View 1 (tube, one colour):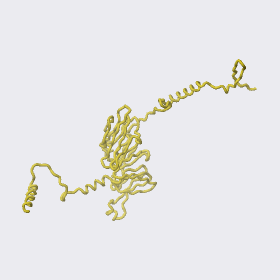
View 2 (cartoon, one colour):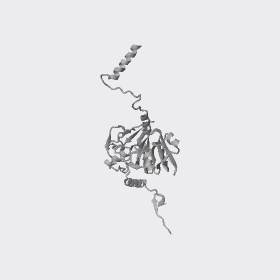
View 3 (cartoon, helix red, strand yellow):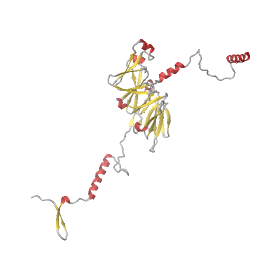
View 4 (cartoon, helix red, strand yellow):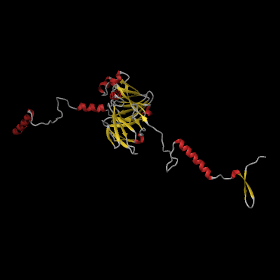
Length: 341
């Protein structure tokens, strides 16, 4: 016959036997067990309690990032909350920097930087890296902006463009790990972004594609800010879908897009269409960004309207004391005309 453990309670009136299973356990032992379990889990997961929430996790692991030229940042910039593009037709970008964060930008693009932000201008990896950027339309030097104070505050950097432009932010990893841009399109980026030279695959593309033989390949981890003239347009291309664009209207395209040129059909279209003999052809799959007012097109229109020598043009007054022979004859001619009247 099985026996079960029991507890005997004696009183002056009678003796009562109760099963051990219904006797309540002390509350203090249960609380101490939970506290010991929480303390052990807190120490193993590097969690520090706060006054408002004792189980809130406030310690984070190290997220330091290093560029290919050895620039170290405490952590990457969260451009979703730390960047802002402002303006309409001519836009600027403002980036908020936390202590230890680094923003890499095109030299000469700075509008302002607040107190505590330090600028460091280098070649970004030696002479070869500087010349490589020059071939892709960038400057020989690049500037790194870092907030150096450790007071818990933040600094701001504002950057503008050299031509009235729209600014678009692209995450390189979202577009296959590589974004190819027109020459000089990069404004600023994460310091872990690298600029590579992308060559046209044939001579006809380099001569007649409107973008030259060298394009700008942006690789690495992080985000880039690219500038475009006029209206900015984004197109998604399906696999094998072609898109023919006018020369110079290309801003960027993602990995997987094929870049080539094709001759315009018809003599009238070639010589009277105003687009030249060739059109740039982009074939999917991938994403393409286009600009409505290429800077070269606007500069060409301005140059075409500047009068050349021989015809009437702008009169530029020159400083000087006495007048020359032309001035004397003009003065005498004018006075003669008045006297004849």
